[in-house]
Image (tube, rainbow, N blue to C red; front, top):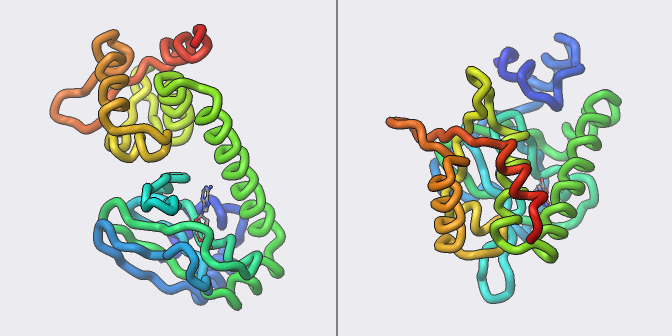
Amino acid sequence: MNAFFENIPLFSELNTSEINAVAALATTHHFNKNNMIVQEGERGDALYIILKGSVKISSYSSDGREVILSLLEPGSFFGEMSLLDQQPRSATVTTLGDTTVLQIRRNNFEHLLLKNPSLTMKLLTEVVHRLRRTSQVLERISTMDVPHRLYNYLQDYCNRFAKQKNGQIIVRLPTHQLIADQLSTSRETISRAISALKKEGIISPISNSREVIIDTEAIDTLLFSMQ
Ligand code: CMP
């Protein structure tokens, strides 16, 4: 169990006895695909850390349209906002595949924050990154056309999740629907824009794999070309 903890960025500065203390306070929970872990508007009393699987963070407009604020992968946490400001949950968190999370209850979380300044700093730094990312998304939605939003998104997504192999950038992209819901557009529009990138050889599928090779330099050129 503690090997899991050492790979979680939030706990990376903790020593073995501090990790043991966290492990003693956390419980593990499994969720199937498409299960809601946290619901917008509910009272929040726990923080979650993803051990396996992935989740989407969504908000719903008054007409029921889903806006995806972020996708989170193993090692990421969620549910900190309600614990810090005592307000209802700010968004809904739903699993995208079978997912295992660690749960830390409010009292234990507060105790950990007060006892471990390095953990508090890591949490704050990540929250600030998310604020920056959300501001950037808001800006690109209000100022860019859809293709440029997509180029910007691909660049950000590759920075976060891609791996390099033989000088190539390889990544498994979210579904077109998930990308569309993050960029406030339709799945069809995203599918058309991605097909155009494939035709130009900027996105190259890898056979028998859901991963693709992305030419991020060409994406950069497109991004800074005139809209
Ligand atoms: P909380 O409000 O407790 O429950 C929903 C969680 O979604 C929230 O804590 C954050 O962890 C996460 N969340 C909300 N808004 C964003 C956002 N804009 N970007 C990334 N994560 C978010």
